Image 1: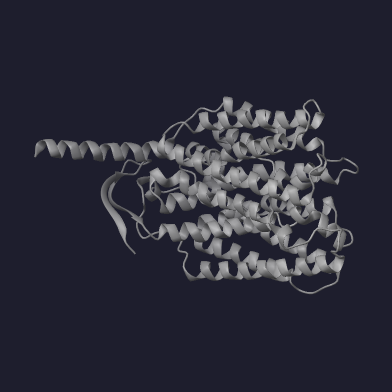
Image 2: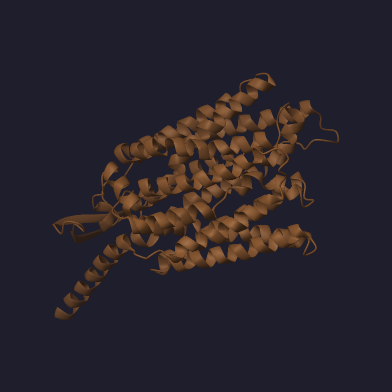
Amino acid sequence: MSSCDTNIEVANPRTGGGQEVITKTYCRRFWILLVFSLLAGFQGQQWNTWSPIGASMEAAYPGWGSSTVAMMANWGPITFLIFVAPMCWLMNTRGLRVSVVTCAAMMSVGTLLRCIHTPPAAFTALCHVCAFLVGTSGTIMLAAPPLLAADWFPPRERTTATAVPIVANQLGTALSYLEPLVVRAPGGAATPADIRSDVSTLLSVEAGIAATLLVMTVAYFPSRPPSPPSITSAAPRLEYRAALAAIVRNRDALLVFASYGLSSIPWEAVLSYYLSSLGIQQEEASWLGVVAVVSSAAAGLLAARLTDLLYGHALTCVLALMLTSVGALYWLCLLSWGTIPAAKWQIYASVIGGMAVNFGATPLFVELAVELAYPCPEGVVTGFMVAVLNFTGAVFLFLFFIPNIGYSWVVYYLLGSCVACALPLLLVREDYARSSIDRRRRLGRSLDGDADSRAC
């Protein structure tokens, strides 16, 4: 495949030793990004498989209810917390290929298990197994994007490349809200047997998609290109244990971790249940979820691209987005309290606005954490950052197991978490350690070129 080659003189940013390094940006990087993004999107769709059709599952399968649906989603945070350390170690020692193929295989096996014809109780157990495997694969799908971007993309594309898989994961969640087009809602002419048949069709299609993605990953997905795309990509990273120790001692990175964990709550997993308390039922809630998640994805890509083009403003942008999210969620609170008449357009605007700007900050959180923790490996930094997110997400989803708790508390929880996330950000000392090295070298090459032109 074609590539754009640049020869540069680079000094090791930590030791000062000089060596000749050839940097190349390979066109195949877009294939790598595409395959990984498809996997990330499928993982997001699988994580949220059951929420959009929760009412149908409750009618067709004995024992299913909001707690069952919440537990299926909760396997994501639980498995992430359990397996983040070994999976980050695997990624750091064996590279992206082994890690990504392993995750693709787990998703393929999990979705295939659900297609086995079994009694309802056994089917539910297999769904839990699948959710466990999908959740475990999420450790790589959510932790690897900045590593993939650093290994394959030049500095002015890194944040955007980081955002694309994250956005794809969110879009996968949006696709899950289209499931009611396949699985009929209860009531009317639809019997429990009809619903079970629809669910079987849906799961068979998903198993086929998982197998296709596994074949694509095995066919071609190298860990790194032959030559690095940037100076810092070629620079050595800390070993796994040393990186963990450095992260623990890094005050600013830990503050970003805490803020990110408080800001991003997985409310889309139970969105249909909360909206039912405002008079919006499953089918309408599904379309609202689609629009909200697509808007979130667009906001994430836009914020990432602006960060690539406008250097040094990630922290300011994150704070602005979080404050906007607080405003949207406060609006939703007023609607829930009845302070403002709950017109549907206002519910739509507050939910879509709150989700969009909240998720739009995600790529910026990741970029800021990686910059503050450099030279720690990008995958390790993001893995433990998302572990904090999954801990707070697990706490949120476990609250649904409290008897008779209802759903009105959801918006208060979200509003409080968004307000709380702004406090750690106010204490962060902004430092773009990795990008500043690449920028200095690019500036040096530009000045050398100007000097050569004047000499000629």
